[in-house]
Amino acid sequence: MPLKNLTRAIFVFIFVFTLPRIGFSQIEKQFNGIRLKESLQSVKTKLDKISENSKIIQVKKPLYPLAKYDEKHLVCTGINLEKGTINEAVFTFSDDSLTFIEAKGNVERALVSQVQDTVSWHYIGYDVYQKQKLFVHKENDVARIMTEEAIHPNLFVWENPYLNGNGKAEPLENTGMIPSFIKMGASYSELQMDLESHSAFTSRRDLPEGDPNAQYQINCFGVNYLGFPRKIEARFGDDILNVVWILTAKGEEDRIRKALIKQFGKPVFEDENWEIYNDWQVGLRKDKPEVLLLEKELGQVYKKEFFKQ
Image (tube, rainbow, N blue to C red; front, side, top):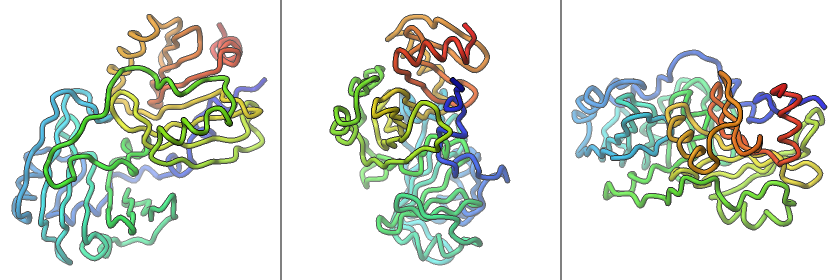
């Protein structure tokens, strides 16, 4: 049986990986010339000149997926741009590199009106400006700008908890465990209620006929894993859950590895791109950051046909 569904070109929404590698977006320059990947001190110096107030929030133990060692947030209010004032915005830094911006309040007039581009597509309520790496939700009056690394784990749907007016966030529970409601081998009717109740929202995607193992995928946004809200892709073959991808980022690879070892013990297989746990039912993918869950029987098929073990 060909294992085409192990290729991420099949598993992930096409738009995430068809974004051209054209460098970083330009729209963030509206914030007094800041750029993605810029340091916290440099960004703060520029933003202090156009903001009423600013506050740096240091997170003791990083949870933000792109942060390996250090996570900080710069929260600003009353940000005066050329075309208007943004009510508030948070600038997220991973290892002293700006990787994510969330702006809220008056974003259409003050920010989006300056985009030198047309909407590339509409997706789950967002206007997506492909070249700018900009995602705008008009109904919520919010805009998010991010690096390409942040697009992969679908951070454009992440609501930064520090953008709430008081600079404080209620942390999600971090058990370090694969969510227990994900029951491999169970039917969709058995799992539907849990998938929906543990997600901020879900959507269904019918899969191409070329996928030999599954016919449809349930995309679950906002599922808590390691204390951060994730997108998971739950795939069903013959109405049975047999494959799940948990989208992650490279910066948290060590944290995920420690959590998997604590839960399942040492890996049963390792190579440059994979670490496999729990008798071939759990995988840590390293070339594209994700955690793979497999139904037990399918895991043995992958062991023989893909990993040649």
